[in-house]
Length: 377
Ligand code: 2IP
Ligand code: CA
Ligand code: CA
View 1: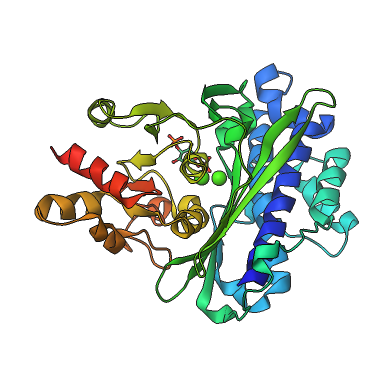
View 2 (view 1 turned 180 degrees about the vertical axis):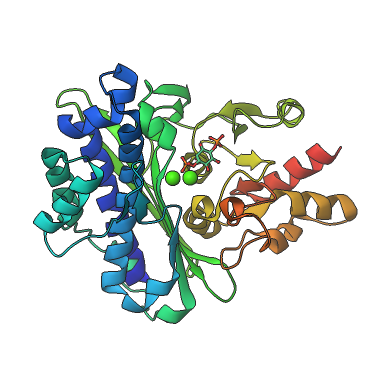
């Protein structure tokens, strides 16, 4: 799988480049923030542009994965659809064309004729990105049965942070509550027959800001479940002990109960919350509602599994532990999130791929088990 993993890394890096370019280049950035500064008269068009950034990142990633692994094509899935209906009702399929010029022409249709912006985006979409194969991956057998693998892509997680570009606020250690640091490009590979995660990448396009040249640099984390391998570049500050991350909209009763044993931190982004667990900045991420999707968790779960942890369906794990007084943390193995089929095939289209029972992400099963027991008291 190492070849596929390197392809996912490259695809995520190209996505990160698109995300950075969009915020850096004046002609693109203005489109992104126009709504806020009030300069734009056409709000509908601004809405189109915001969606375009996500659609383009996903399409470019899917394109590059397809180019290397042609038979994966039917099983590359993601949050966005590349058929983009602009607010004037025109349907445009956003697809990488043969050359920069043709891609720019296509993007121009979405960008209301803005040639400079279209050219810039097309250029970075066509740029080639080289990632050296990490030494630890070099001796791994590379047999991939392309017909047994599926891919989930979340082109930009924490869209709100990406668009608004909040001033970054540290919660503790190297853990950000809000800010561009919480934006993550997420790509995961899973086994189509078992639904289990196989490999994943989390790419933070805005990990470090250089005050001198005002440029952001990124951070790329990756993992493989078999053999278990995970690489996350080290952070500068040590983690605060006993931290649990949650959404600020998490149930107040749940927050209250866990705040007796943990420091509860609200940080943005489902992907970034899981990344904070991977990095050891938090012990766990708990979400009791079904507000994340398969594309939010597939890649990140592969990294947690490589570290001996995982992500369980909160509702199912909670109910099982409640029923069986004598069970141990071993039981968590039975409730890992899976990715090949929808949790509820009859669910409405917009929530079909939701992790419907919520989730609990952890590195140490004992800690996760303790959290579930605590909630049940
Ligand atoms: C969102 C994003 C949100 C998260 C939500 C995800 O993905 O990560 O931050 O909500 O679950 O689906 P919260 O921050 O309340 O946990 P996207 O940004 O891709 O829409
Ligand atoms: Ca998301
Ligand atoms: Ca997204």
